Length: 365
Length: 182
Image 1 (cartoon, chains in turn yellow, purple):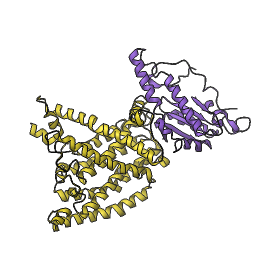
Image 2: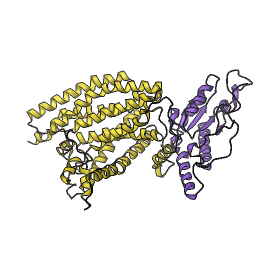
Image 3: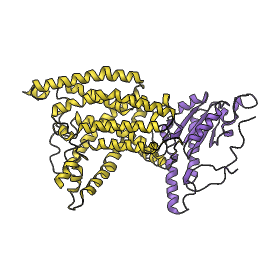
Image 4: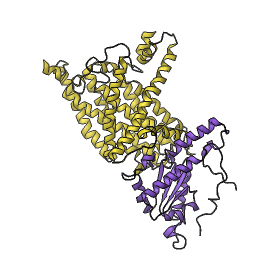
């Protein structure tokens, strides 16, 4: 049974390997999901929110929140509590989906977040179909986003709903193409396989495997940013044109969920880039060569990479003006897609010609 | 007509007066006073000064306040500028769309009392925001300096802190009776 559990949820197996108790597998999985969600993911999302506000304030030459706790660290707690105790207003004409759609978006995003492996032991879910599952979750989250926007029965939200649908066609092709170089390099569509094919040193990452993969990585980061709907690609929820768009009718605790969804998207795009291209939680010097607790080292390494990437993303968000839909689509189809195709073809060519060796290995040999 | 003032929302009078609940009360007030998202109602020139408040020099985000464009996301409405008769119904509507608890900060003479455009001089504007919506804080000035708006925000924070989230207060004034008619 433990072997099966390890195949489905390595994190649950790892967690219960410390205790000698025998409990049903579903309890183990439920416990693992709760612990992973509330103690691993949620604090990171809160930290991303804090980083967003402070870094954004710094870019605008402001101070940012500094009254609540040391350097405004507890601002997120105050925001969350306030939203919890606020009225949860709902337009009378809104449909049933209005209530459940943000929760569904969050669930689907968590499906994707849970499939990001921190290390061999620390992966909440290990899905054989790997990247296909991930791409499906990324698309499905946009579908529920459309649902929530359309059910609000508000002209701005409806406009936003149509923009969300159009938006799928913008990022889908470059994103799907940019998933391929890691698959070609590692020979696996399983996230765990892609992770274990890389090493701790930068020259063992997929990004620096060959020139094609380098281009693919940049295309992937760009396409994931378009997927996130954050500035400068947030024309689906532009506050100046369509008054917040999809989320403009949400208040109270559901507004809090919206913030969680936004930062879950940020976490997901940075985490995926880190795992697929930047070596994930792998560390050099054999720092992880001690027992089961080595997963904490992997976790620290992955978190550092995610936050460094998130800082780049926040930098772009606060310094670039919003692009309109036409600019996004021309960036996506005229820049990202050709470069993505070039990257896939040249990675495939490299794998054939260099017999699977990376750039550094080819130089060494 | 008994007008129910939804000052503190559904929690009002929902909890008995026990010590535990008073601590909870304090916690909720702390969260509310430290995270005031405001709806930018820039109706006239005061709006420019209001935008300054969230800028680099004055930075209202130090207090956890961020501007919002959707009334559903806002706790506070900063009415900045002249309320014309054409805008007044929209102001009321946006106030009605804000979720409870909600506060209003009236900024500048026009929205305090009509100012330069009060009923004595103008045929087309409302003599004060308090004629159509309940106002918590008035900030004088024409227009007020951003420091004055920050002072108004601090006054509002004190007002939120001094109230109980869960205990009903005395009846409010008859703010809504007098409509914006001459």
